[in-house]
Length: 400
Image (cartoon, rainbow, N blue to C red; front, side):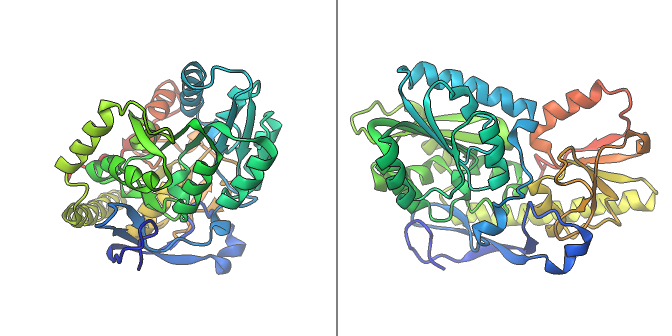
């Protein structure tokens, strides 16, 4: 295999086995049509980019029935509101400034910029429609260099381009970086945030590895990828979202202050050996230990007639359940508030997805918090809920 970024020869260091589409929650009548692929991970010694070997056709993942709406999380609403205020203060001081978001989802971020010239780009048609309903000017396409030329011709250069949990989804990252560089003004800014490779390694949170996440970035790999397109990394911010993320700030302008924290985080990554293959060989061993211990936990509960229920039918849960070979014999059902997921089955393992039913709740029940990255929000919510009983199993961070 060739590295997607630098074309260097690379090979897989770990296989998670046969995997379905992570957000492919399925009806019983459609089981025969279910799509599978082999999920394997690779690391490029040359450009230091962590990537999956094969990604399914993006149209299989982002389409008219995409079952993820960011606005359902109060924590994420607060997160984007806070960031919007910061961007307006520091980067978009003129009312005619032009802001673009790649992967705007249901408009959770861009609705804060209705008074600015703005554009949301969202390939999943159903969530793009929600963004439009929220007053966000949206086009439903995949971003590319070709599309950047169309936007440039119609709207002119952008002052700021933003994306959240999107850049890691894009297999042809070189084409997208080229398109961003083409669209941005010379003093324009690219800001994006994604799950951070360092946190995945530290926490053994392998559930961040699935079809949509073709890359997991470090500051070093971001610098290597985008510098080829005159996009210079000048600032980074550690975030708590999605179990540990990093926000990256880049500019075409060369004579800019290179914030100390960029150099500091890259030095830290080298000390933690994120640039060396040996780290990923150890990560593989840690994943295998998790698999064994998690399966034992479920088998012990089954032997004691203790009901185990999943909490949150997340895309990340698809990786856990399929890698660990867990079906409804060990986890009876998964509760989720997303209507598009309810009354369907989990991808690959076919565990029923239901709306919350607190009548089934007993003190003996165990809840596996698949949405562990929203732990604080969820535990606070259920702590106040007098109907909720039972105990929690939090899969990550995993103590090796």
